[in-house]
Amino acid sequence: MRIASILDRNDVTAAVPVGTKREVLAALVDLIQGNHPELDRAQLLNVLLRREELRSTGIEAGVAFPHGRVPHLKNLLACFGRCRKGVPFDSFDGRPTHFFVVLLVPEDAEGSHLKALARLNRMFQDAGFRERLLAAPDAGALHALILEQDEKG
Image (tube, rainbow, N blue to C red; front, side, top):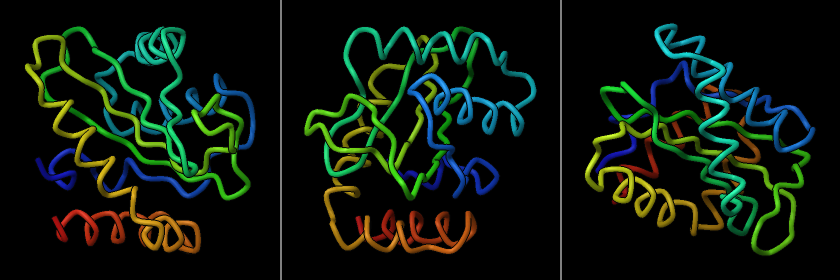
């Protein structure tokens, strides 16, 4: 699965606010809901917060993959946000999180989100890629870097 097929340029921000986990997720939900007005903001936030209650989606090396199943969603959607300063996100390694890839998953999706998560995990294991993302000047540059990394396979 190509990340380019689920991540629209308008769903990328270089300005995730420093704050609580809830504030970060709310900012990312606002971003994706603004580009997809048919989605219900409260429902999206609730889905992501419920998933975080099960286990943090903050992994390691400054990366988190918040995700959850959304009723009536037709296609897998993603958004990406960066916070240069980093945010406490209960990550496995205990370090601040800088990169957030939100995946919204249709209820009836059969494994497509697992393929997307696996692909994202491979992409973000590359320390050079994470460094380029941290240095990128704006959302357009972030999106371009993600598409470039996605092409590398």
